[in-house]
Image 1 (spheres, rainbow, N blue to C red):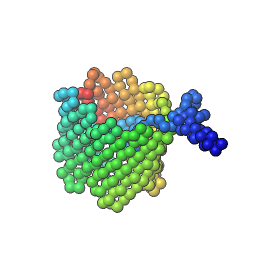
Image 2: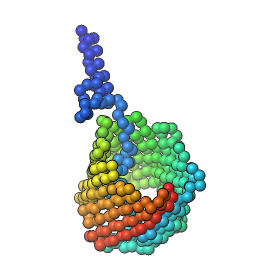
Image 3: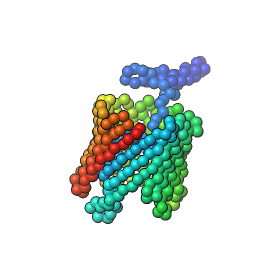
Image 4: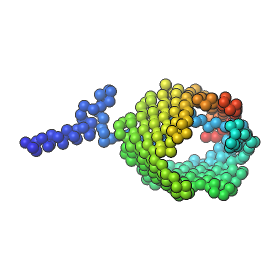
Length: 317
């Protein structure tokens, strides 16, 4: 008799894990708890919201040209003329004129991506991504400058599991980081991170959650550094998305909320946002021809009375 009960209990447990019980979604479909989808990377947990809320705003003139030399190798040229903000203790914004030319080389194939940039002020940046296997990837980011102690280097080791992703980070200044994210249901994932900065003797931990459906994406993050971040994205249609976020620092008691939009038209893409700091921004990408895009960028900070306007063009895919 005990063996029958034990077998029945075991069968019931197996049926629950495999989704043969009463659990399921609203449509009555069975959920296989042993076959959950792989979540996004921990560092990309807010990527959909950032598309609308953090467009690539700039001030001045910008021109980018990319020339492919083969299917895997291309060269890029970029010219920028405008102004940049200088950090100051006063609330008033201080700007100085700036201009630079940037030369770049890109090598991309099925398993490797190598991108290098050099600017007229002497700065050099390099990015390497190499897929050792289908699940294991190594990434290297480096920046070299003429100023002492400003050069940086970072190694990322990414592992993609069936229903989870993990990453280990190693950087200069004795930086060590680790993050992990796991799907717990077909639409819900939980993750955490930890870091140690040896030179400054600082450490921190953080936790995150992400809810993702075809129409809604909601995320939440909290860290021991004092930051709390919430984002929400609503896909109104295939061409329209709305996004919002809430940022709070419990140490400084400061909070900010912003709302943004992403609108895809037949030949252009319009993104914009406004926040509780009195800042309104818009970014327009107009496709003039195949491989030719016209850019418009605008940002107004009503409280600081700071106005930024930029236009540019990109040529080449």
